[in-house]
Length: 204
Image (cartoon, rainbow, N blue to C red; front, side, top):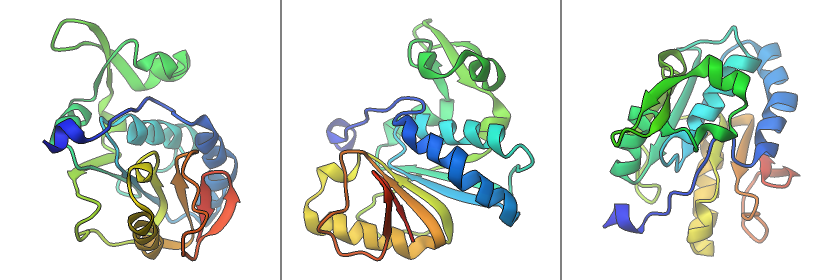
């Protein structure tokens, strides 16, 4: 039933302003700091978000490789996590990826139905660890994270739940770490200790 009820709308490099912000503001700080990068994609769906982040990291911080860079990607739905593990996407889904990146980080494949597709190549996949997680339950992982993405997830929760989630995310961010939310998900009227940076971007 969880898999039926869970909403899983996603695409590669969705809400491009977040990826621009990473490239222009976050990656230079990470490079200067020189001690790795750790991110969490909370509500990763079928994997487009964490793999987009992995591709951007490989482009922007090519000297960083696992285990110095780690992306945890979690979702409640086992079905979408299985899709993320396969990392095979119909060609129409990968159209949002610029051709030069598609050529470097994907290889031609076929879906189970024989539809033309692309598969995320193994090195990029190695940046991402996939796990099933209920955001309402206790979290087994520990921080600190440089970046937490929880985009277009909290719109389905009531105010009290959103507030508690944001507080829990903040507790796992390192000082100076970032929380990205969906562009329709401001944190106004929620009690938290994060600082507004720009729409859908908050910093501890």
